[in-house]
Image 1 (cartoon, rainbow, N blue to C red):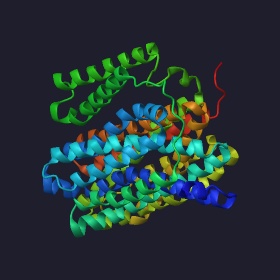
Image 2 (cartoon, rainbow, N blue to C red):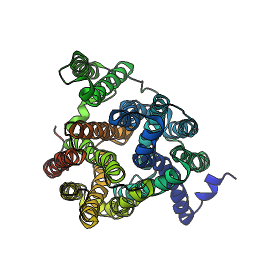
Image 3 (tube, rainbow, N blue to C red):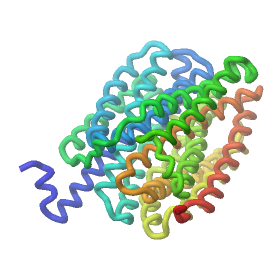
Image 4 (cartoon, helix red, strand yellow):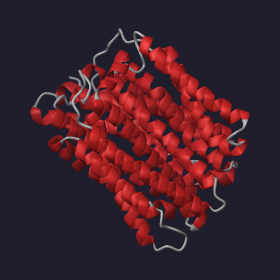
Length: 463
């Protein structure tokens, strides 16, 4: 008898089957977040070995998030069309291969290319995992608790990434951080293959090739202009032309989506205030998260003289709440809904970021500690809540599309956050002064997310 049939024989074993199922898909997304945090503490070592200035380091981070954001929408469609399990396994295999190659590259360009390939795998894993959860947990309360556990397991990657990554960078070099993905991918692949049942397939769903190409052009053009604007000059023909291309491709994308029979983004979904607010909130929270994860490790290592491992330990107060708190957030959301957890989460993150504005080379670590705790707590309240808000605001057969939309907006926010930090810091002669200015702007953005959540999440869909 097959393992899946045995596990489903009794109610007790059904719970065991769901635990194994949740572990398998959580490990997949674990790698997506691990890549983000591990790379953040390895950037100075990558710079020393492969060269490249602040712009080059931005590309190392953003090559991943740009591709992730650009392909997330199509991956949501592919999840609905081909089945979530197939897409999830495909993403695991791609990450497994790209991680091994990333550890062996000898140039910054090759590393950036492999980071882009890893972004393809990450884009496949996320909407597939959310679709699998939605189908396995049809009850909204149970689903919210499952999403809390999923976020907590994956949040461990955020906590472990800087510490383990920093230790590996100091002892074995930055290449070793990519080898972390290999055993995790193998375990997740084994669990997924054996214990997860394929979801229903919608064979009528077709890929929107035109919309997909325009989405990628828009994201890449905007990211290129933001990251290279300082180098070329903001009024240079290259940057102005690239910004124009980003605007034109965005307008054409909206036109194509409005006319397409199988759009990448069904525009009618935006009639739901919760979905619209959730997408905007996802972008805002990741602007803060990714921007801070980019700039603070560089500050710790280059300005305060910490080792990669010590910098990772210094980030733990931010990461630990993100690993533990989502379990409780899931329970809170199942009782009171997502609106108030999102509102308070953004406010806490904004307060923590505002405290970090006062941090400099000679400041006591206690101020940094307090700011990082508030920031991590706020993010751990916000992300599971906005996921639940978006997934609950659409019909079940459109969960794959909605999950792709919310996570595409989050990854676009991650790209913009890193680019924004680079722009602001580069405009100041002092790194620390530029960091303070960028953190102040980030605090205002997060405060705006709190207001947006309070006013929009949970509103009734327009008729």
